[in-house]
Length: 351
Image (cartoon, rainbow, N blue to C red):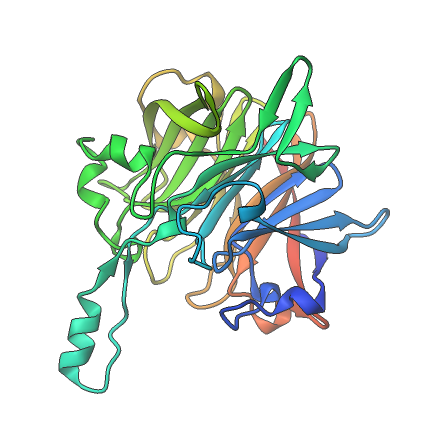
């Protein structure tokens, strides 16, 4: 049984520019010490809550605009579709979905609705992979680490692509899906786990290919003479047999990769947490079979409410880990006045 954790937001910051509320759900989470970093897919900011000692509660809400740390692909775009947060021990990594978007069937006539349904857009700040140093637990433009300076930086790119999607244009597995809308099994990053040295695991909600979900294993480094920019060194692909599910989030537990799954497209399904043992030791493209991905936890999943979207590790003792699961499209039972929502704290045994 999960324990309930209350996430208390500042009521003055709860209503977003889109009119939605932060307390109705978040898209990504990363716990670092007593801080809980969160992102919402309708902003270009990160939120920070602090754990209340002795209580299952986080408050002290602060918001940090990403434009204060890195140059955004589209300075005028107020929605980043931020889907991944992770810490590598020095920096917080922030990842956008990189997904194309299809308009809904909207209009006063059938012709207008069909025309709207045919529009697929590729929008600016979704193409974001950035790091922000954490200096004393606070985000910083730069910080000293020993004899070197670590600076906030982002992967090179523009409003409709970045170095990652450019590299994937000729990929035999993923290239055909780059132009498809995310809800049509198109390319869609929905989770990240960060290892030291600029190695990121990017979990794809889509595409799911022949029933296999994909984890992109990328290596990034600072560009020579351009310390505010990152370049892609290489990428690997790992195809995971998640029984037809896509990936909603990732986090590392030592050398193991924990995988939060969910339906790749709209509709019913189930959400689970699975373990890929020894993922950090992978050095080549791979196919990971179902028997190597044991199911550790099954979570409730509803078609329109309470979608498990964020996962972060709070503590580990041997093979027992404490996982915080956060939800998007939170139902009324998960919302707490004023401007709060609840998350689930699960104790999970890895073996």
